[in-house]
Amino acid sequence: MALLTAVVLSACKPAATEPVFEEAWIRSLPPGMKMTAGFGILKNETAQDVEFTAFSSPAFSDVSLHETVVIDGVNKMQKVDSLTVASGESVELAPGGYHLMLVMPRASIYPGRTVPVEFTAADGRTFTYDVSVERR
Image (tube, rainbow, N blue to C red; front, side, top):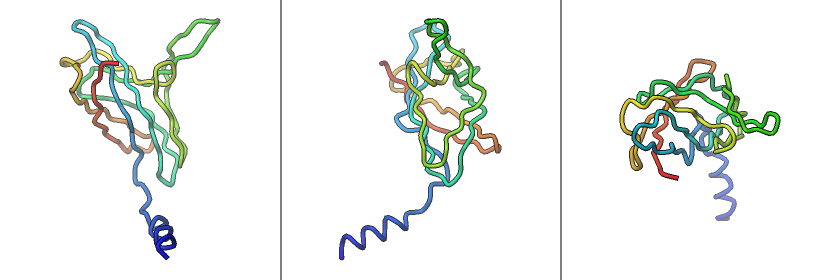
């Protein structure tokens, strides 16, 4: 009976209303550096696909999405105009793959600090995530 109750209660779990950015982190910057990267797992447990088309942060002059690709045997970064995360799926932002490029910090970016990063969807919704700065 307890197992049946657990199954029924888990089925009643409310649907997620927005995507989450789990295990998110920004690489700390030594003094004088003007660019860093952000990583994490974009998880979409909502009922619809979400297409992200813009990124920003009050802590940086510019934030954009990039992907590392191999062209003629050489790793290169290229800007990505949009990223769709299907319903029930996740996309990892990690070194060597998709990542946020964060340019021209407006203040010191040091380990232990938390930085707000905003993701804008194609439908105009915005999602703000507090991302920790780490030395990795």
